[in-house]
Length: 529
Image (cartoon, rainbow, N blue to C red):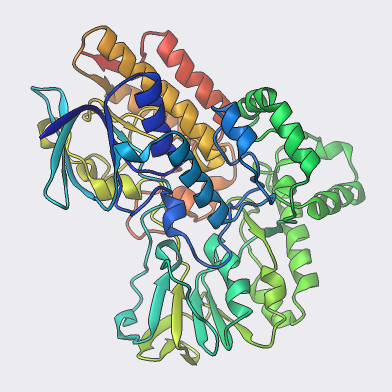
């Protein structure tokens, strides 16, 4: 069995940076494992038509640690495509020679902690074993595909694809009747593309969405040059502005008339991206009346776009704006004006069965040749529970997280010494720019590892008391907003039986300040031994 200083699980944004930083900056021996055949993580698997970063991304959905990398990579669109993100990560892996320390096509099937040796021992699906003092889980917030257990779904005889596990070869929709279940991010992105080619598309909507116009466009030469010249300052501003370089506008709604507020909404709608959510008025995610106003504004835009009033009504979300994952729209609502697209609202017309060639809902049978499951993920906690590491005294993570996803800082877990998560439950994750968030989290993990090694200690482990305090802090922040009032994957509500708990941290800049404070206060909340 080969021993390393650090084992990393995952080769997406977080895993790649962890390998680079720990190997090249700290000079540690590192080995990473990934079940895919190449780098990319989430971006390796999510190859469905129309897949893009669901935020205004270029050039900010990228690593920030290397000016040289910034200068040599050319982003072409404001909303980056999956192919561009994957090509970028492949370029990064090649530039920093990362693949030599990554083992692909290898799933970690067991990870167990040896308390006597202060080591993690992992086993893989090809029968190999390896050990390391430290285990870093860069397993992804959106990795474990969620496939609802619809009655009789296995009876369907046609091709069936999950957007989160899309095949590498092109899927031909021409001449096909395609059923798409789900209208979250992957559904809203893929449905317009599928409809351009398919004979007919039947959309089975589980929950309507507040999709905002992406206004995707080519990046200008001037924008590229400006970002490169000012990258150091941009990185600092991103660190303190929730992961984005632009400053948010905090208008006070009471200082504007209703007519003036609507003018602001119109301006931000035309601007596109997430600006309506973050740049309209202070308190839009906390004040019900203000949120209702923005919600109705977005619903009015859906009514304007979708020609058939009955279809438009089915597309109307009735929960608070922004409390589900915000989605950027590249022609989704316009797609319902096509003759070859129909909508089934599963809230009033639920799926009851499948046949070999159809989906049967309460109202009748819908003939299809192909089924696309755009049904999302067991988000944030799912990949860690799939790994299900065993900590001290054989405690499994599934046992630990049976009631609450208790951990400390979204990175460490009591009972699991020397194990660290990137983007775990309670970390900013999707509420921050994830590449930069991964870099900052890895810097904290690096401090922990260096301290243990410098002091010739065996282990660092989160305290149970610190975990409880952290959970209460996360919930307190969330409870001052409208997020907990909506059933969303942010709350774990999309997975039957999953504990209902807010899975993110809404104050990303303060969170990373907190990580620095923990280090400065001699690793407060941890036990070192």
